[in-house]
Image 1: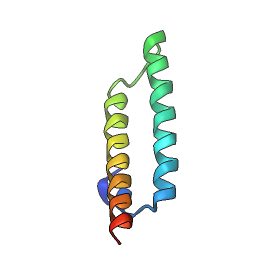
Image 2: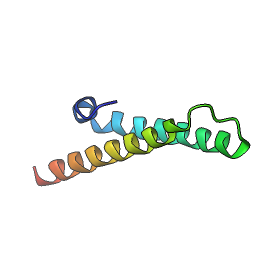
Image 3: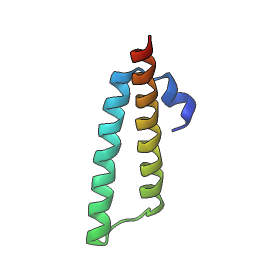
Length: 67
C-alpha cells in the first residue's frame, strides 16, 4: 500500500483499514510467538502501513478542524 492510495481514502475507510491492519498484525505476532511465522518481514511492513494510515487520518482531522 502506498501513500497516494492512503491519502485518497476517506476517513471512514482509513479507520476500517487501520482496524484491518491491526488485526493482521496481531495474528502475525501470534504466529511469531508460536513459531509458525513464514514471512517475518511482513510485520515491519504492517507496522509502517499502520503508521501511514494513522498519519493520513490525523492530517484529515486537522484539515477538517481548520475548515
